[in-house]
Length: 259
Image (cartoon, rainbow, N blue to C red; front, side):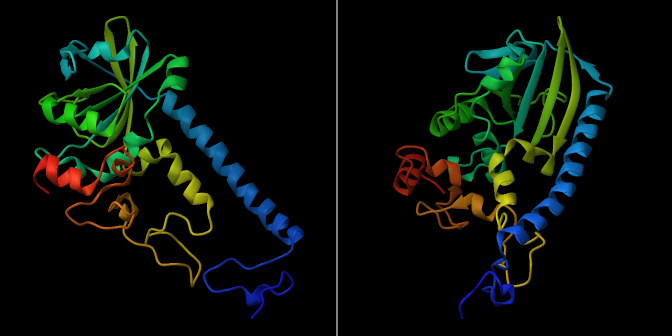
């Protein structure tokens, strides 16, 4: 059956109906009203976020980086504001066994030059022992500063999987904001772009028209084999880890010796 713009009922299953440009523009304009309302509400929430109270804590608490223990204050790099991502860690796991969600988040935060230009520093914190963390950073090719907060209580340490913001006033340090779960999505530009596509993220929880491709569990596409196939097998990794030059299943099993 041939699909024509004048007969949207003949659209193929699992695809949007086909219409003429004027009909599409009218539907697009209608959705734009909702999008603008969503944007304005986001602006209002951001304004409320800037008015949250803050919590002072000891900025001299030590975290461990490539140069050994350093005071938390050093993470500001002389700037007044700091954003950190708290990366979950599985002790003793091979590189491909680290958190797929945190890997995806960190991969989208590889360059903080625009944050720096606005007076904001960035760092990744994790509870992993520094020796393991350093190896992982080298494997992934990360250039952002990483620090181990093993044994450090919150707000500098504590629970992982959070985006957290801090403010410095001289030698005084304050916690100003923290979010987790889907709150972390704002740094993942890939998810935002997928949300614009007809099929979305390909996850089971999404509201899709009848006949759309079925989704899988959240994160399903973030683990794959070397060919990009979704899998949770012994040589699977978060997708970004395959993009590292020389990262192959042979290297994984041979270099690290365990699954």
